[in-house]
Length: 458
Image (cartoon, rainbow, N blue to C red; front, side, top):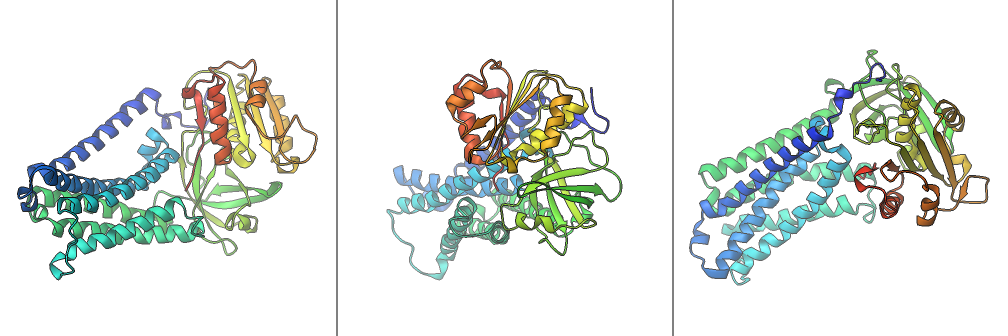
């Protein structure tokens, strides 16, 4: 039974996702294999005059360099929030691929000059004008190292999210431009013909994707982002606020319970920055969206300053963290840490409205009872969902609760005793908590194909 306004056609079946995902991977491999053939089919004079291991070093160095350039193209594609890719892979996984791909690029960029120099017996190029493409490559290597290092360890460098993001975006364009210049002028292979066209086409598509991202950022009202107005801001727990928004034009986009969106407030009291948050409301609510935000950062610490009537641009929905993604009425286990309850709340609200009476267990860990959001609503959900059980875990102090202390293997084994190991397990909360809980539930017998995590790291 579907809620009115909820479009389940937004969700691809598992078979369709596998088919489309396999097609995407196949196309990626085709592009990479095409790239790897260039040093063989279009040999430069520098390769023609090499023999034995030195020829292998030189050819491998060129392959590594070209592979890094192609992976940069995929970096931009992965950051472009293509809705089709989200429906296949989920945006949080795509961003994880983006992070891993960046590390792979850094490794390839480092190995590229090492192999090239090995082909020359590690002879350093003299500091002469004619070697400017090679020295340009050194500068490019530094830029790529800075981009990857700050993306993965920005907190170690003391970068706030918004400052890092601006640096990252500003650094990408010159990096791509330098890649193009370096490739076109460092080797005679790319002076003309198909290799030159290949590189120019990929770079052109890259720049178009970047222009699209900039257009979305600077002209949100003229893109696919929806315009909303804040209708309520309410404190719902310690350091947590519920922000309700209504569409300006009265049309609410379709989404499934558990998805998230990027919100950009237009307010005199909160910086105009874009951040992702779970949609805590249910698709069966037709008039508004609700986001529950905990004030634990520089930007979120100002969220309570939002005023009714402030405008908000929303880009979404994204994600596949939802019980409706996979078919069937199997029992559901939800394990939440703190504000990680928001996607579960969306699912529970929807199931209550749909009179879904399957067996549901929620294990919810909070520091103290003060951190529990909407305590009255959760009591009401227990009344509406007859087979729904909540176990509240308090990790600090000696307050009354169902359980005390942190979740560990012994505690989870005891709490999950009697639940079918084919149950769907949804985990959301702090990253380390999700990592450990996921490991434990798989270890005690739950199928890894039925354990879902909402891991979203920017």
